[in-house]
Length: 52
Length: 139
Image: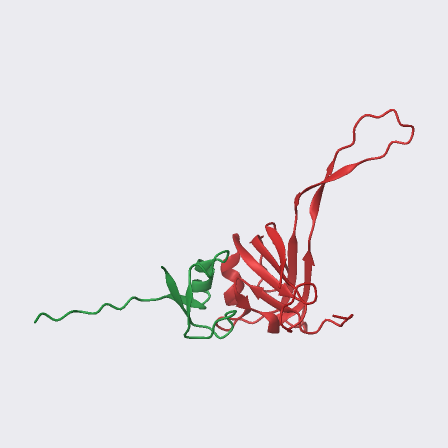
């Protein structure tokens, strides 16, 4: 599922630093939110498994 | 809720709370009037209409702010796109029938005027209208 990190302090229902899902943004323009500096796509972290 | 004076109407545009910049807001629930007048032998004919498709809108006036994530940054990317606008009569907790959220979904913002006004005026974004879509009242 696509998620976004909230960057602004006036995003409805979410505080800065919290995560919002694409489902929660249904009906909204995600492009405008990104361009406006309100959210950014979350970067998935990958864990490397060290070979034994 | 008793009668009240507008002072803390809550406005969210594209999931962004812009309440602190709103100076005027109008929510219009409407349907088209479709004429259904037919031939009649009646001596006192009159037009008759039936309700057509919804023709809703929300019109908002903002004080302008070009700072990051504020009014301009939020609105400029919405020109020509559909979005959601939520208006609540007061800042109290939403409640069905007493303080409902009016949610307009699929509404188009076709025009945005980032700079307007005369010398000495407070900088504002005048009467942006979000048109079309469906309006619902939710608690």
